[in-house]
Image (tube, rainbow, N blue to C red):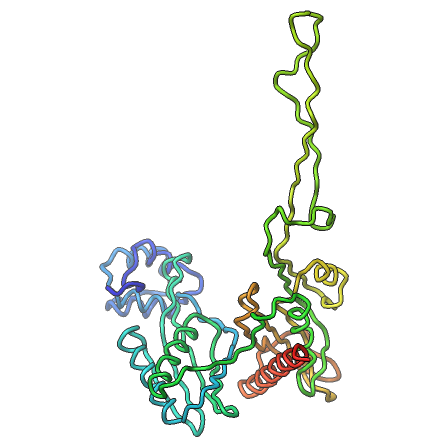
Length: 390
């Protein structure tokens, strides 16, 4: 059995899976028909689950039940990185094909490479394990699409922000170096080399306003981070907002009352001892309306916090355009890298007012909005780099 894979489940796990509310009667009938057993709609679900879980089971039973009641593959944030090294389309195709072979032969995953004009795409189907979940939810069937597009003198690689994307890109860099005999240069949206909290927090503040032809409606959610670079001894204990100082009087256990006995030395008053209780807040999240300009956020920024995640509503500068809910963040808050983003959905405009419910944007609209956000992030980074050179 390959490490990191599950091929069977316990009787109890099968019983629990078959009694879940999410499993419909039609799906339960299919489970029993796979064993040549016909069941009635009037049969008790627990009795059926008990009967089936008592049978012998193999990998295929486990796989089929996992597809019915297993973990669901949710939407993931998107990220991108630009390969700045000069590489031809043919060389990149060869490198990508080698990555595909590595995924199939070494990782035992399904992978396919497709070419459409100047766009290359690698589609990977794989399993993600999460042993903290119930047994039949530990395996999630996932699909990762990695797209490579010509951008200026380089290639932009876009995909989901997860470990699989990082593994694929690292393998791709190695293969590019082999086919080009050059070191691979990359560029990402990152402020890892700029530790200044003010510059970092202003990145997201500027980003939301750099979306071309769009205006900010409201900021509804922000998360802040306070890097802890120093030791507690270096803290400014006078900062009342972050530190509480308690004075504690300590008495000696040898203290006794003076009973007048001349042979007993009278107790001496013990010196007052002070101890500092440090309260340190590393992260804070605020949700509501007008969050970005709230007093609480401004005070946190005054204490060295900076924004690492933001969720905001925006719309095109056209009458009747829908409101879009975006989210952007830096996955590694301390280094301020691993930038990713997602279009959470849209609020449609109808009969002079906006809907209260959020709906997912169409794939075409979502792709268009993602490109706008990528361009805004690149512009924001370019502006910061130019200002630092002055």
